[in-house]
Length: 229
Image 1 (cartoon, helix red, strand yellow):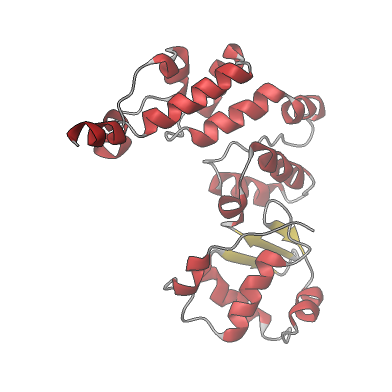
Image 2 (cartoon, one colour):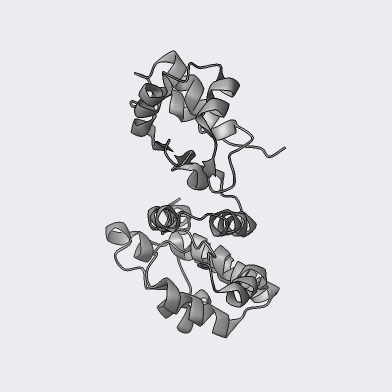
């Protein structure tokens, strides 16, 4: 049985507090029910929702209207629910993104899938549109692709993903180099240069990779505090 995580701060969220008791029950169900997949975009009938929550199906339209304030969308004509922040809250590894891609690839509503990808554009979901079966298989199973997903999710400036991916695949780091890249990337993210003006001076990821930015020396804010002491 998959485990789901719900942010405890939801109970004090200004959009959650005014919700009705039934609305709160429905919200928790949308995250924790057995039909919810890795994408948080899944098929479930109105009858099933009513049976499992013990809520009157006549109240569901009103209750789902409440849930819009906390980013849960219901598509009764398609028998679908989209918990929009599900991926952001559940993501813990690159393999989870592969599971998300598999969910999306099994959906026939391409318009909704594209809307999903646009909403989650900050995440490197290895989704391949229908019809590209061979490329899809290579993308999902390639270890270098999975390593790129790890790098992309850590890099703070999500710009020119295609160029960044090409630079990373060309580099094709082994396990030791990947660890070095990710460790020094963490230091770079804490450096005054990258923190200045809200990250304005962070290079594009492809530029950083091509310049072997992980070999640069970065002084972090913690280093500065230690020196002051």
